[in-house]
Length: 371
Image (tube, rainbow, N blue to C red; front, side, top):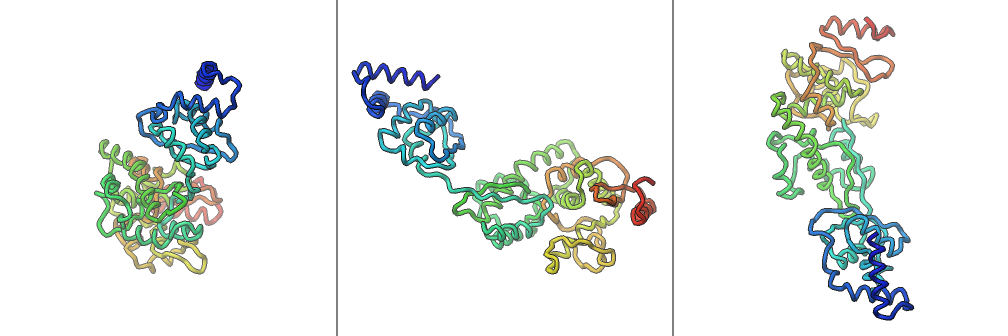
């Protein structure tokens, strides 16, 4: 309806000026001159980012209508008049833009002549260790994997502005000298296409960690169910490597927490895999399969078969589901679990070592999950 109102206004102006037979651009010139004082008025005073896209071949009038629909301008006809009369219509680029309702029409027209460079999509998967992310960056030839690895391993936040670092409430729990393993939130990130650095990805991950994990953690603190954040992330990272089915995450978390409470060693296979590191012969970061006779041969503080308590820190990037599972585990008295055969992703849980051995033996003999 707005565009119709503007057109009626234009028609009235043309009648007054006696220009009903003039060309389209001349008519727009009349409208532009009559409304020139509004060019430096924005549609709103608020400053908020509005993502805007122009497809190749889109005419100026359609762009103007789309801008009005997006709430960036309030007079599509005035925008069209401005760009056409000033010879800018052909200079508007196809691509992605970030605009704001507090921009004036001349400012918007200038911005639309400089499309953003295509972004870089980077996906960090739950359960990855930071070296896997670094390897992925090298493979897609987008950012420096070595730069990312160094910054993450050394917890180097120098590439992140001070004002952003001050917002990171999780830093009070991060032990000095530890890497950022476990704090590097797994997600898909869109980074700027030009000039993007490893620090940009690191910042995006830490921003996402603060935004997604810390509200859940502070709620657990308020409810009196939280453990130390670094410890929670350490357990959650093990859960992430063990769990396949989401509804088992709180069950598996509770097994490890039960063992910790009783002073038992965690005896978690993923901690041995983490300590073993990269396997050149298979190209794996997580050695599979791993055999029982290897457990006592891996001398590392991360090997929970040889060491009491938790390893020094997380072994991977846990998902929010695994973190939530540790902060709100299932209440049970299980101390062991073994994977079901057949690749179901599920586990059978046991209260005693004897029960556990029976389940393991049953599966070795091709038995069912029923006792």
